[in-house]
Length: 248
Image 1 (tube, rainbow, N blue to C red):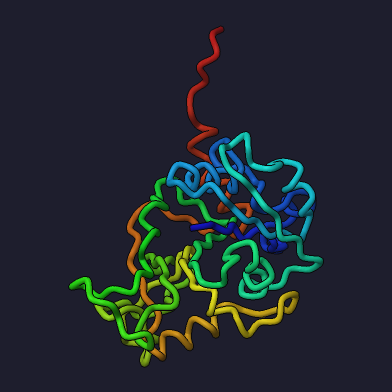
Image 2: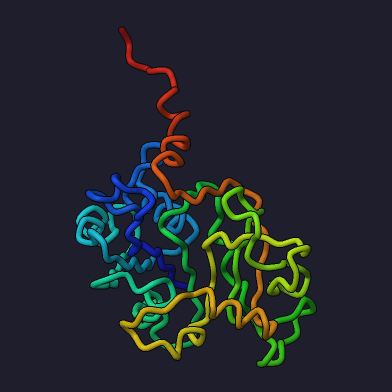
């Protein structure tokens, strides 16, 4: 299974930092955000990694190179302007699933998840039910999302999580969870998107939820969606506050 790191966003709310540095290259606790992902992916056996980029994209390529220094094989999908999540995935599809069948992992380049075990993502879309029997083709999950408890900035959540998978909310009273921007997808989800066009992921996922083809689970580990300089500074504060080991 291959993995993709989404790194094409402009990071408007992170300005002025992102005026001169792509958001995925901003450092968290001494390491660029995107490097945290690469190292954790390689640790989990995801060696072949695709990275899309647009804003200051050459800086990303210059910094990461071919990935060999991290034990990875990195391919790039360059976008003139950011194509949104689904559009970016559709453009990179030949790199992610050359046979048009194999599922792949996608993670956003601007989240911080230092302890997420990407190895758990393998096999989540296997066409077997809980007893090991094949699912009917029209009932299988086309995507599997990792969810987190609703953060303060997104109290309404995205989907209702139950034993049958992820469902769209039918009322505000329903308990929901927030998409953690980590998902496993079958290539068929993006087959109707013309490569190079803009397309959002949300409508595709909501359609799957209505059809009962969207699976998922709750992730309870450390997760941060970094949107502003203040959020980045808060996450780095413990690092800055640590006592110096330099002898005087």
